[in-house]
Image 1 (cartoon, rainbow, N blue to C red):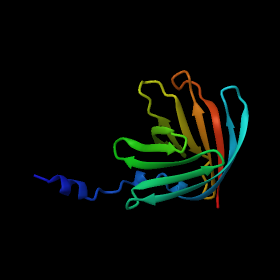
Image 2: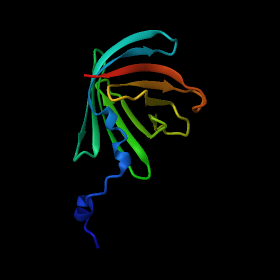
Image 3: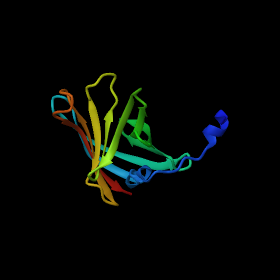
Image 4: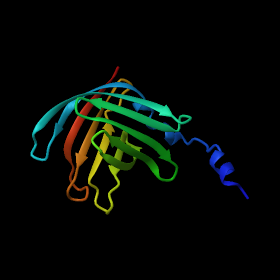
Length: 155
């Protein structure tokens, strides 16, 4: 029988999917616009520092703008896809899950019920830039409203 310590220290094999977020690793300048529910715009400038931690198995984000400071941790879970947890200096907490397909990384919030409330989409990915969108839905994901768009440029 395997002891708990031995189980926890077994080195799992690293699936190729765990590198799907490699495009995000690095230092970024972010510029964009957020939209409230009435469509009013607010310009955003920010920086984002992304690195691999914990033997390269976790991706850590450090996001900083004039009004928002937050961090996230993302990990690929075989058989379940990507998981991300976001926390920020305003007391925000968001749990997300998703996958990489068709050149896009999409992570959706994990609500208490079956209705999807919001998602983030990374697309137009190149080695030096990409776009990040935060979208919201009120009809279970049939229609999505753009709430925040950031264009990332590698520093």
